[in-house]
Image (cartoon, rainbow, N blue to C red; front, side, top):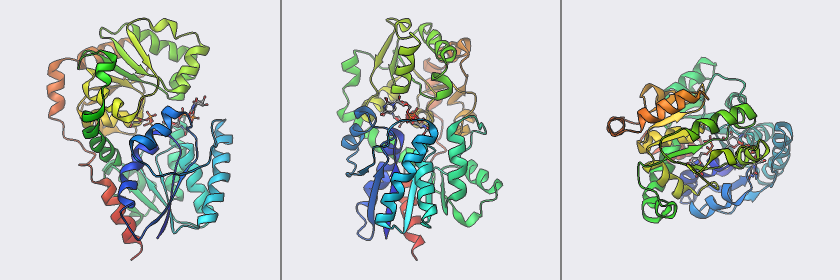
Length: 363
Ligand code: UD1
Ligand code: UDP
């Protein structure tokens, strides 16, 4: 079987890594690994090739741009690679512009498409990711759904049941496998001179939160009022806007800003945080898996299981709620309750399930 995999951003490199590891052991699969280059900074790209031992990719260097430019450039560049390789199947993962471009490039060349993380919905069409998810799901031939909720979403939208595979969530594989390595390798707590549970970890990069000055200011104001110090590895989109809106100096001494971190250091910080404040999709789940309380600075989520289980709460950019929820969730009692939460995302066997499903398609 000839298989193309298309990725382009940090979370895609992370989430695809367990599957690539297994594919590399399959003699019957020839892999074309395409990286659009939507993310290109060392800290968002190369560092994950090194840590996660990813194979060399066709790196297409499409870079940043307006949504149309970025998606269009990726579509043209991926199509060229797909025509050259002529795969039996193309796999895309998640909801980025690179996933959309990969799916469109393949389907228009009459190559069957498989979508990993299919069926997720935030039901908020203002998010570019929601549009991407819907389109990718509806042009895909094989949908690998991480949750029962996702399966139901797909069926509600009329996607035939025989196209859907309930595989659980591949983030679990990546998180559990790499946390074991992180425990050995990461020295980030020592490097930042912080103790477990003595800090709040922060990530923010959603365009709705960071591209608007008033919204980013709301977040910065809330962070300065938290009791515990914060560690904030800053996404380049957010850094650019913090500089443009003169908000960097407002953060003050209580906040340690770092470059985006490698996966081992990030998982170590997440596991040992009193609480995480985030707008990331992946971090909401990883927090549940590692049993760290999560406060999500959004009003919707495509991972509603985290909310139902009270491992996570949606607070938007309401400063008071951010502060109250971080305080409430940072104490020992809350941490003990987190220990009892059973993850609805599977046990870390999703890459095997997806590989089995792919191999089964040939029979
Ligand atoms: C993208 C995805 C988002 C995902 C996120 C993961 C879309 C629509 N968005 O958002 O779903 O959660 O990746 O992190 O696909 N930049 C750099 N260096 C880089 C990459 C980006 O400086 O290596 C800066 C550029 O100024 C760029 C901005 O960040 O314009 C935004 O990058 P982009 O890839 O468009 O979107 P993300 O916010 O990263
Ligand atoms: N992550 C990382 N370093 C960081 C911040 C996040 O390795 O400094 C990891 C995190 O553990 C998760 C993924 O990046 O696996 C999430 O990426 P991001 O928040 O950019 O995207 P999203 O999941 O929202 O699409």
